[in-house]
Amino acid sequence: MGSAETELTFFDCNAFIGRPVTGILRPAPTAGDLLAEMDRNGIDRALVWHIAQHDYAPTVGNRMLAEQIAPHDRLVGCWTLLPMCLPEFPKPVDLVAQMKDARIRGLRVFPESHRYLLRREVFGSMFDVMVERRIPLILSMARGTSWQAAYDLLAEVRDLVCIVSDHGCWGADRWFRPLLDHYEHVYIDLSDYLLDGGIEALSADYGTSRLLYGSGFPAQYPGGMMMAIRHAEIDPADRQAIAAGNLDRLLGEVRL
Amino acid sequence: MIGTSPLAEAFWRDGRCASCPVYDMHGHMGVWHSIYFPRPDAADMVRTMDSAGVKMLLFAHHASLFSADVGHGPAIEAVRQFPDRLRAYLPVNGAYPDQIKTDLKLMDECPDVFVGIKFLCSYHLVPMTDERYRPAWELADERRLLVLAHTWQDSQYDGPEQVRRIAEQYPNLALLMGHSCHGAWDQAVRLAREFPNVYLELTAVLDDRGVIEKFVSEAGADRMLFGTDLPWFDPHHGIGALLSADITDEDRHLILHRNAERLLAPLL
Image (tube, rainbow over all chains, first blue to last red):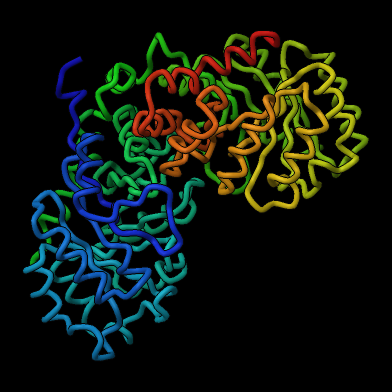
């Protein structure tokens, strides 16, 4: 077996740092802790967020993330968005400038946890800015986003680049496949997609360009999905695309 | 690659490892109402097992678990189609006590198929300590069978307290705590330490980082068994999680095959 087939590089689309308010067994309080575990598992880069963006306060958590990742080129950040109708959060043009300065290439929303609706009335022009600049929105189905909200948002902003994440370890095909069918800029984070034969089935039906390696770290073991991708019965080039290439391309298209 | 251990190198390179055959002690089979399975049938599952070096799977068929009207025929057929690779648990449902008495006869009628009994009390809504299950527990204890019981942290049907009462009452059977009382990790460890016939089964545990290390250090790798809920979860994912965990290859050998080989030796 050639090295091209065994040596994959990984770019993780779903990792966080910080200590969750409800506690987990092995948190990664700092970017250094995350990088150490990435090195131990053979992960090259990560799109990372700080749990304080959800558990404490998005504005503070965003700042903490920026400070943590600043010295580490292997980490790209993902901030949390809040409604634009209050003075607590920057307007789109200011936010984009701050993202550029802080190496932030994605945004997350937690509408149920943070008590707002995921609608244009709430976010003004922000979704249009995200479409224009191809800034991905990560929807965590386990942390404060309902499937109904995801469906409604994409019906309203169909060209939004959207990563569906944390969709649960029970095979969620019935939830997310209609989104893949109807919206070409929807991507699936595989960190929860443990389904036997699932990667092969999704690849056969949709191709591999919309599937992304995610670890779920530090709540999950990074090696689980790495092994599943490594031995998925698909073309080796497609494995590499899922492991890193697709996220690399997606974030490379972001214009700040 | 995940780490640098010999097992990590072999599984990463080949997907399986000849010196580390895998025994999956918690599987299912067939279609089910809440999940689309790309590979639900016996032949599909054995193909998956081949790719991950899974030597044997012990399973409870979804039909046996969820439809008394379909029953155990599909499980019997599957084991007899792949007698070197599959064995079945006989599911019992306390909602139908007369059916339990009838079904337990299959343990004698099909000794080539069934190696134990499966309890899914949280789904059948009958506590594992309920009197209606007594014939099944007594048979398993008398014959020193494997019992795979779904267990979950705060369930009134199969939580840690129910497990404790069963373990005290039936010391001869091997009680595999399916999902290791998921979420009640400390209580699961205490049960495994206190009762030598109680085991920590890892289905749906392997995606909770840190639990493997906790179980190994506090209960011992010799009390842990690998499981995947196949066809729910890809065994490569579970193996990858074990390779990612901060434990030794010796621990992995115990979890993936040596403990299971010891338990299954008198039953196969």
